[in-house]
Amino acid sequence: MMPRNESEAGACEQEVRVLVVDDSTDAANVLTAVLISANFSAQAAYDGLSAVEAASTFHPHVVLLDLDMPMMDGYATAQRMRQLELEDPPLLIAHTARSDVESVAATAHAGFDLHISKPYEVKYLVELLLRTLSVRLCGGQPLRLRRG
Image (tube, rainbow, N blue to C red; front, side, top):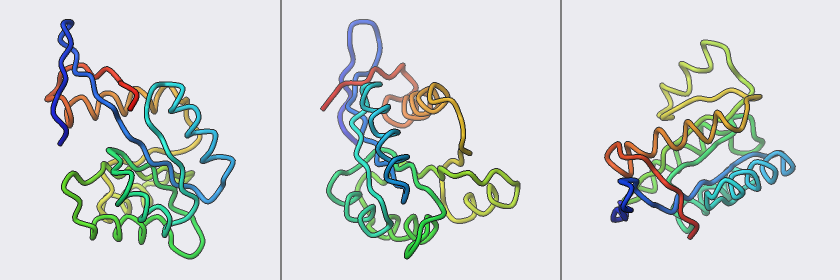
């Protein structure tokens, strides 16, 4: 993990890297732009293979991973990312239109850390990321995003 940088207000200031993986280039690009505007460092990948490559070079803290992609679906992509054995493995979030109980259970069984169903308000995603990462990166202190 990266060393903490604590400000005078008690917040932990971090650059947070998010990899958005979706075979819909428009959806991936829009979400990436929204995350950048919220001060995340974000990058898009449009298929499983390029996502695995990006995970090993971009070193994301979070991967938002669509499940329904051609060639290599989100489950196989998540498995390949876990096999990279990165020093700081990313938080894997299933980012999908599937919201049924079976799909949520399948993503948990496949090793995803979280499951969020589209559509949702972007504000919800940002709050979820900040809450989750404040524990993971900052020991529970408030997380303030810093651009890299």
